[in-house]
Image (cartoon, rainbow, N blue to C red):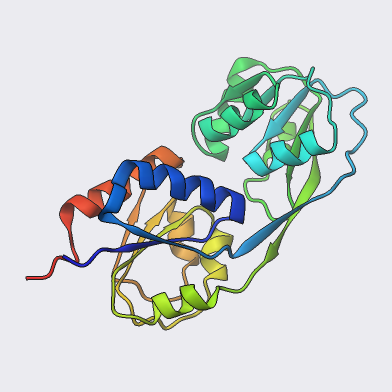
Length: 237
């Protein structure tokens, strides 16, 4: 049996947290290589919050940027998923998780009759047009960029891994992360676990196998990695 290596490309802190969680779950069955394709750079300036009654976060990075800029913790917030909600709650915010993606977030806010005006605190690269779509449905919302996602090249270790012969498990959480992996080609058998079909569509090189997680969250990605390990596609006969 050849031990696969999980290549983690999220920002450094997120990748290290993910590696620790996956190591605790899968133990010696996997190795790890951390090579962020993005660096998170918070903007220390917050927009005016006068009149804002509800915040929206679509990533833990947005929460961290808001907190580091000393944003008030008295405003309630909606989050796209449970991981972002946990980050908000740990920071002292009252958070309601939509438990899914942008579609689920918009639906939850509308169904709840949440109070506007709202402010979506996001990165420079974002999808979903959340503020515009909420406003179009009668829930006034604006947006503010509170961090940027600067592209980083793959490390020499990651490049060597992708050009090697051993199996690589590559979890990908956003279309931009997929695109920043580059054009390839790669020599290693790569098994992609994608957060969504949009992530798969953004890939620019051929892979051995690709699966979309059952839900757009870390837990579902972990389950998909576990399923790969159980099926052992790289077993040596």
